[in-house]
Length: 156
Ligand SMILES: Nc1ncnc2c1ncn2[C@@H]1O[C@H](COP(=O)(O)OP(=O)(O)OP(=O)(O)O)[C@@H](O)[C@H]1O
Ligand SMILES: [Mg+2]
Image (cartoon, rainbow, N blue to C red; front, side, top):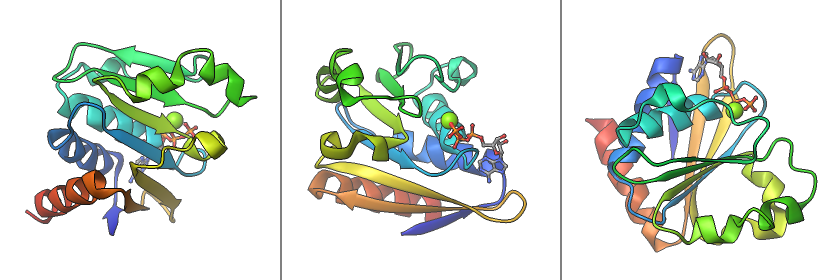
């Protein structure tokens, strides 16, 4: 399933539509090159969970940032600077994944064998100007349902 975004605010809006449908424990894996819009989508998810999205910045120098003010906690991962998988394991990566919040993971492809077996995967493709193609795929039944709901909401 693909969505086209023509601006950062459209991507943010897609994020807030995703957020509306999230349940405790949901995992969203974001994959795409530098500047493709992963953090923008994460901000949209945070604002849809009713957190101050201004606090959601690219976590660059920390691998995991926890936001607790919203409808559900959000664990925002940025694995761009991940050197070895042990670095996130020692931060309790797996405990976050199976906690009651929502995990949003930038550079999720760096997870290799730790890539969640069930998740909503969003791949970003940079196009000329402000255009981005967001390709969604669901791994597991929970995420197929989530994707159906997102599709209904974005269609409206
Ligand atoms: N349609 C769009 N969707 C998202 N961002 C857009 C769009 N058009 C322009 N932009 C701009 O592109 C940039 C995307 O930056 P963002 O930090 O979200 O990228 P990223 O994928 O998180 O990169 P990084 O890998 O460095 O973390 C922002 O400056 C944003 O304003
Ligand atoms: Mg980013």
